[in-house]
Length: 357
Image (cartoon, rainbow, N blue to C red; front, side):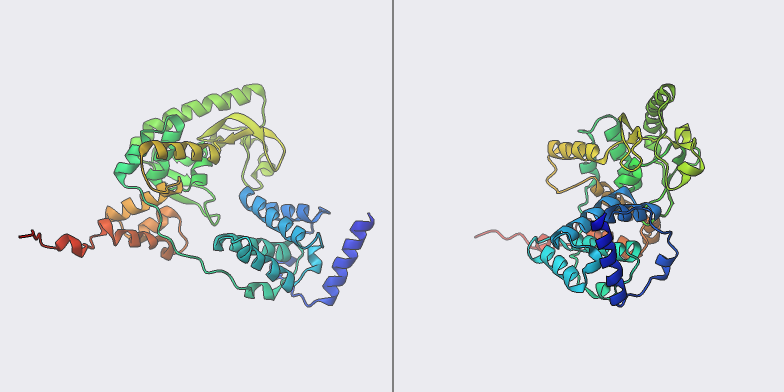
């Protein structure tokens, strides 16, 4: 109790003695109910509907930041401490530019959305330059070889990623209602940036998807018979429609065979297929296929984009299918096509044959 009072006094004193600018967006946020700093961070993240992955990452970096500075309250830490921490990550731990960016984003969110203050100097902190790397792309022959070493729902899921260009989490979170067989369309809900979009339903996968839904319905029926809670619902829909999570329409297309504890609600329910499970199967299949590329499940999305561009579709169409906010992101695939299959011929291929006399 004394510690909490001391921290609160230090915090309020720090606010009164430092020039902070309140964010207009922060003023509109409801007051926090949690007492502990990290619980406040989780509360704010969930209120703003950030993903569980973002929550885990932000909590990790804020906890790391506090421990790095000897468990001092963040309200007592300023520009020097933040810059020291971020510099240490780069210079001592050698983290990648993307990791540095994530740590900075976590601290910006924490100070702005949880402590309710805007620190202009944080936006001026130097960021490591992100290296632009060409995506790993698999040829159609390589995709076919890879699929030979995948079985069951993992094979179907890999075909779906390659056939639609969905991100792995978008595919895993598909609900029954999102698959429209009549219009040959799949609706991707809450994609990156919180946007919905429509992608094609590959005709060659219709039979496989119907069979997958038949298997999923057996899991759903078993849960109904056992009186188990429904699947997790997005945002506040679970409070608004408490029974919707138990309906067939909201059930997962790719459900996990077992039940697990929901990390946020603590409810034991059926989750969708775990991404780690599929990633392990993908890695084994890649090894067995003899493909010597550093491919990941995300490479199927890259391969989709490249194949669609090679088929002659315009860049804007590909942008919409991939759900890119900026066409510049989609343009990276044109760089892949400029070499190899893109038609730039190497001069060594034009050398005349000369024999030694």
